[in-house]
Image (cartoon, rainbow over all chains, first blue to last red; front, side, top):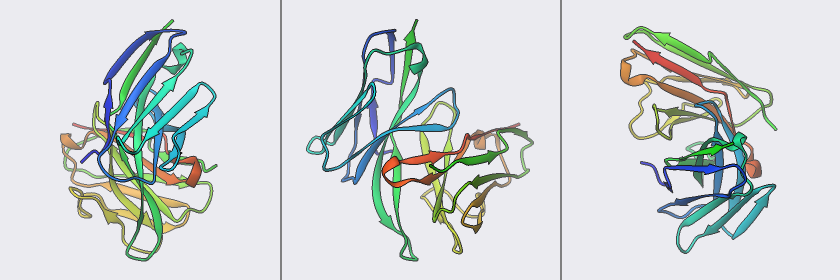
Length: 118
Length: 113
């Protein structure tokens, strides 16, 4: 089952405005990641925030993480038409397989469809 | 950062047939991951593939339906067997890059008719 719940499901804004997307999750995590997907293509990694971090910035992106509320937000400032895409949060949990190899398992939220109008 | 070449990019298949999807990574990786994205939905993990051992499948996915091969540290295949229209989805492979998250293949858009 999906761990992450995102809202809004769809967001429509004008170029230059800020876009905020929220993500909530249910269990303990090692990190939370945000991805962008254009028109059903492969996903592009945007940013990763560790469970002991509260805020990270990358260019026009700002991510916050509140582990006490099990929630995260992605802010895109000064949006552009090229930012139009689906945005997914994904929680990362460290696991170990039967052979002893450690790896991270991602669980994705439902996604937010962002439309930026020129 | 790892680059993944995924083939085919799309296919239209008859029900009852099988399709094998390939992912080639430009560097050696321990684990590879296969996801399914049903129309208008999010990604669901199908299985993790470790070289030299049997893949680990998530709840709801079985080896007979989605056999996976991992013959070496740069290559993996996912087969969608005995397809039905419900298998119409985008299938994606990915590899972990630690702090930099995951790199995904460009996806295979499968339509079963």
